[in-house]
Length: 215
Image 1 (cartoon, rainbow, N blue to C red):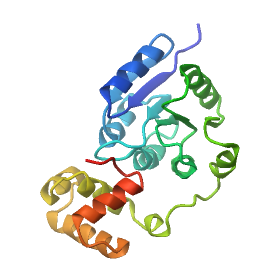
Image 2 (cartoon, helix red, strand yellow):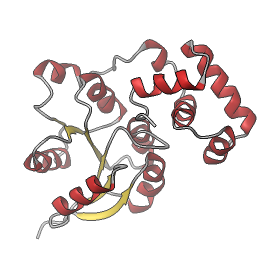
Image 3 (cartoon, rainbow, N blue to C red):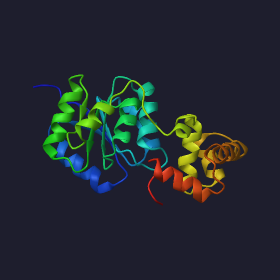
């Protein structure tokens, strides 16, 4: 009998996780289910999955930034995004972040099987629900992102998401292992770089660029 692939699931909706578990448990070894991006980057190195199935919009750390960390933490794990975002810009950034596959939550269950088989075979998979034009744009050597967004450091991206989700500076400092003063410095730098003046405007920016969903 062929070895069953070890799969780690990440989505902030319990019903989605349960649905994926039921779809996959008969042919995959499920090594974990987590509901936020920070838990994902914590658990993945400990369970060493063959495959990570994750969403883009997740609390604490979005899927794109989580994937960038996973590329270093678990370089042998293959990453598939399962998301509602059909915009080719998201697909482009996902592949640039290290994804091997990208499909939509409205994809058929049978397509998930195809995607898993494809990426475990060492190839890339993009759902045909995204247009052929998007396909050509989605696996570039360099990704097109909003110019200002592309200039943000990984730490600034983390702070931006946590601020947008309503976390206090003290809470952000504790989560990231930095001082409150450093959090406030990053927040001020973000506002200056993005040309916004309030936390509300930061939140709107974060939502518009897929860092988080509306609180």
